[in-house]
Image (cartoon, rainbow, N blue to C red; front, top):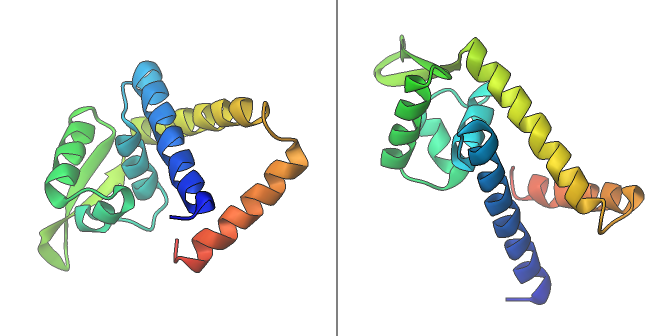
Length: 139
């Protein structure tokens, strides 16, 4: 693995762990739960099957997370009228509110962390390059 590849991987791991710790402490929400809420909130991912690729966990893991989020009143489910074996997922008002607050807080935390290591114009370039990589990889 090239040093750059390794550094990008490590950065993702560290940021994910930091986000998970902060979300659990502030919102009783794991980073995976946040990512699933964000996926549903984006309007692009509507079912449990759609969500399994977003965090790299299997259907059983997604089912457990969805059950917990439904139990907390953050998500609601409905049967897909085109495929009765498929559950459709929707954010509740509480889920939408929590997602917005948690997302804002994560952005604030990230900005605070990166502000210590890079100037705003450097972060702009980093974000542009990162976006180009993700687009090229289909994300």
